[in-house]
Length: 295
Image 1 (cartoon, rainbow, N blue to C red):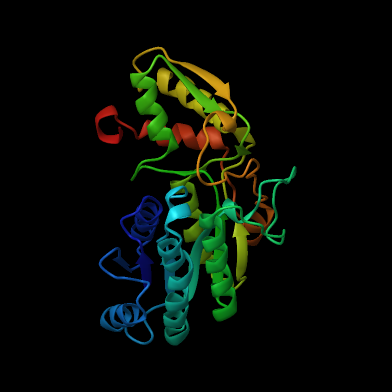
Image 2 (image 1 turned 180 degrees about the vertical axis):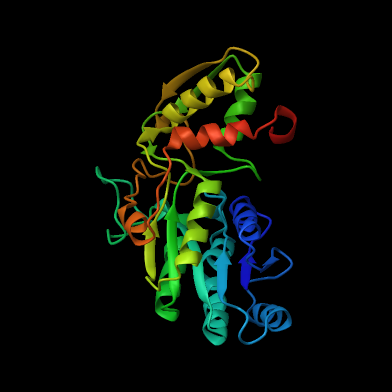
């Protein structure tokens, strides 16, 4: 049995679909269970799981408003870091393994080669600091964990860069998109399939892993491909010029890593994973999009 935390979110909804497809029983919780409250976590687990039935906890809950976190440190700290103490305590008591998601923001973005799992963390934002503290809490409390760092996540259930670009490209004659931040997108469906693979393998190869789609692009490159594919599929109904710009032209409260590429060799070898190219996954996503439903 799986406890899926943050079950109404973009990634969790795709994980739920994978669990259903493979007949894995799960119980979800969202904001109705305050994971920052130890008593609430214990009460939920006691009410929904017998002592032997809780095998996996998948935590998709997070404070992800990167800029807002700069002024909301206490709330981000509670959800991204302190809550993991409660979740790990429950996992330990019931003998469950934990799958938790972290971020490229734990790094400072100054590398020139894709980050590996053992590279030194040096977060430059409140969001990154609180996510790193969450990782550290897990490592200190629960050996049976899989921490998956990911980047540039998008998917079908919720606002994201792709849906925003599609909307703006249908509204505006021109767009400027930053061309000095480099990484690779992550399609939520692909990440959800990787999670299922970890559960199926159940090989106890615990630790930190990196996952994103394959590729090496900038946000501008991403936007250009969204426009190209969106036009071809009839999702963009007008012409729109996409122009590159620098991050300094769009100042934001929280620092963005200029380099977010993650080395995925470890997760690919450990779980025999084949990871799709970013543009192939974008195509898969866009095929499921309708103008009315998505944006």
